[in-house]
Length: 91
Image (cartoon, rainbow, N blue to C red):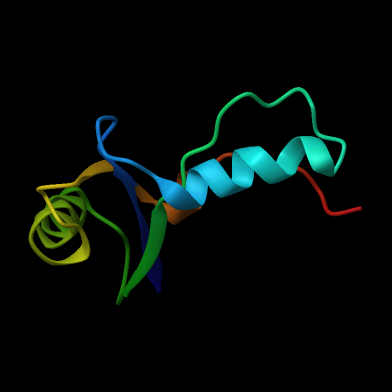
Protein backbone atom coordinates (compact mmCIF):
# COMPACT_ATOMS: atom_id res chain seq x y z
CA UNK A 1 0.00 0.00 0.00
CA UNK A 2 1.34 3.43 -0.92
CA UNK A 3 0.79 6.79 0.68
CA UNK A 4 0.86 10.32 -0.73
CA UNK A 5 1.48 13.34 1.49
CA UNK A 6 -0.17 16.64 0.56
CA UNK A 7 0.76 19.85 2.38
CA UNK A 8 -1.31 23.02 2.12
CA UNK A 9 -0.37 26.43 3.52
CA UNK A 10 -2.14 29.78 3.70
CA UNK A 11 -1.04 32.18 0.96
CA UNK A 12 1.63 34.60 2.24
CA UNK A 13 -0.73 37.59 2.06
CA UNK A 14 -3.43 35.86 4.14
CA UNK A 15 -3.57 36.51 7.89
CA UNK A 16 -2.69 33.37 9.86
CA UNK A 17 -4.07 33.76 13.40
CA UNK A 18 -3.00 30.24 14.42
CA UNK A 19 0.55 30.94 13.26
CA UNK A 20 0.54 34.24 15.19
CA UNK A 21 -0.61 32.43 18.33
CA UNK A 22 2.16 29.85 17.93
CA UNK A 23 4.88 32.46 17.37
CA UNK A 24 3.62 34.34 20.44
CA UNK A 25 3.73 31.22 22.62
CA UNK A 26 7.16 29.96 21.54
CA UNK A 27 9.25 32.51 23.50
CA UNK A 28 7.11 32.00 26.60
CA UNK A 29 8.12 28.34 26.45
CA UNK A 30 11.80 29.14 26.01
CA UNK A 31 12.02 28.80 22.22
CA UNK A 32 13.46 32.22 21.46
CA UNK A 33 15.23 31.27 18.22
CA UNK A 34 12.00 31.19 16.19
CA UNK A 35 10.79 34.51 14.76
CA UNK A 36 7.81 33.41 12.69
CA UNK A 37 5.29 30.62 12.27
CA UNK A 38 2.61 29.68 9.76
CA UNK A 39 0.20 26.83 10.31
CA UNK A 40 -0.97 24.68 7.44
CA UNK A 41 -2.62 21.34 6.79
CA UNK A 42 -1.19 17.91 6.00
CA UNK A 43 -3.17 15.15 4.33
CA UNK A 44 -2.11 11.52 3.88
CA UNK A 45 -3.83 9.74 1.00
CA UNK A 46 -3.53 5.96 0.82
CA UNK A 47 -3.46 4.07 -2.49
CA UNK A 48 -3.40 0.41 -3.44
CA UNK A 49 0.00 -0.46 -4.85
CA UNK A 50 2.91 1.85 -5.57
CA UNK A 51 2.78 5.62 -5.80
CA UNK A 52 3.36 6.48 -9.46
CA UNK A 53 3.75 9.78 -11.29
CA UNK A 54 0.11 9.46 -12.41
CA UNK A 55 -1.06 8.99 -8.81
CA UNK A 56 0.96 12.05 -7.72
CA UNK A 57 -0.60 14.09 -10.55
CA UNK A 58 -4.08 12.98 -9.49
CA UNK A 59 -3.26 13.79 -5.84
CA UNK A 60 -2.21 17.31 -6.91
CA UNK A 61 -5.51 17.72 -8.79
CA UNK A 62 -7.43 16.54 -5.71
CA UNK A 63 -5.41 18.90 -3.53
CA UNK A 64 -6.12 21.87 -5.79
CA UNK A 65 -9.86 21.14 -6.09
CA UNK A 66 -10.86 19.56 -2.76
CA UNK A 67 -8.14 19.65 -0.11
CA UNK A 68 -7.34 23.36 -0.40
CA UNK A 69 -9.19 26.60 -0.85
CA UNK A 70 -7.35 28.12 -3.84
CA UNK A 71 -8.45 31.63 -2.91
CA UNK A 72 -6.53 31.62 0.38
CA UNK A 73 -4.26 28.55 0.28
CA UNK A 74 -1.42 27.12 -1.81
CA UNK A 75 -0.66 23.44 -2.31
CA UNK A 76 3.02 23.48 -1.38
CA UNK A 77 3.90 19.80 -1.57
CA UNK A 78 2.61 16.55 -3.03
CA UNK A 79 5.00 13.64 -2.49
CA UNK A 80 5.34 9.90 -2.04
CA UNK A 81 5.41 9.38 1.73
CA UNK A 82 8.12 6.73 1.41
CA UNK A 83 10.52 9.34 0.00
CA UNK A 84 10.17 11.73 2.95
CA UNK A 85 13.30 12.61 4.84
CA UNK A 86 13.89 11.11 8.25
CA UNK A 87 12.37 12.95 11.17
CA UNK A 88 14.14 14.00 14.35
CA UNK A 89 13.69 11.12 16.82
CA UNK A 90 11.39 11.67 19.80
CA UNK A 91 13.10 12.26 23.13
